[in-house]
Amino acid sequence: MVLPVCAGTQAYPELPLQEMRIAAYTKAFAERFGLPAPPPGTEPSGGLQAIEFAIEKGPKWAPRYYCNFYLYVDSSLPIKYPEEGVAGEKYMLITTTHFFGRAYEQWMEWSLQDRRYSTGLDGKYNRKARMATKNYMPGKQGAISDLDYIEFHKNILPNLDYLKLNFSPFSLMINKVNNGVDIWVQQRGNTDYRSRIKSDSSDFIKFSIPEVVLQKIRQWGNQAKEANRKINAVIRDKSDQ
Image (cartoon, rainbow, N blue to C red; front, side, top):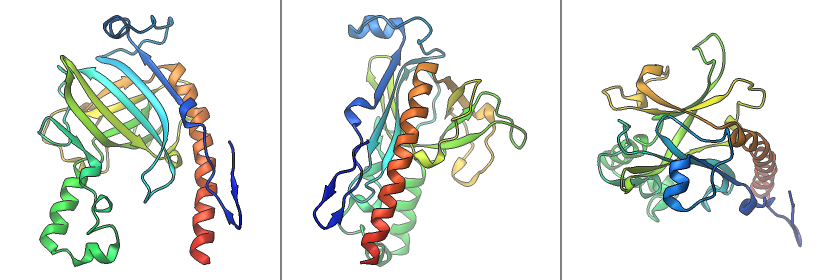
């Protein structure tokens, strides 16, 4: 990790993001898109055609590093997407995207009706996905963490859906996991997880993260976590000036 220094100020740490991406995919996905054949033991399964993991920097109002999953799944899977439309992107909804809502004071000038409506839309993108250890049993063993939908697109190509899921390195909980980790995405049903804390595993479709990807999540996730710690220190220093 390189930590540049600007004259008179402490700069944010920079990570080599172009190198912090890894993808795993099925043989059928490789044949469809002209990719090299997947190495033995790396292919996803269960309707997950391909998975890419990447460390990326957040938007200008949140200049920290985040962990992102890009999933390409069979369109036949009964996934409960945030919206009923063809596609969506969370950043279309949150107030910091819009000039009239970027500051808390501006947000509070909105009518109560508008604030409740906006919060309801934003909330649809949260708590519909999880990351959990394979041995997870609520209150007994293993670990589970939330993933947020950032964007999705149904039928981005024939029979192929696209999901982008996001989590903060601060919620990284897989450093000492030996028996694998799954990504959970909520399947169609009536359960509203915006107001529900406990996860019923029967409400979710599970995709196993290939071990080759898990290794990079551990390595790069910890690098991002350390970089974010330094970024937070810089932000605190600037706010004290």
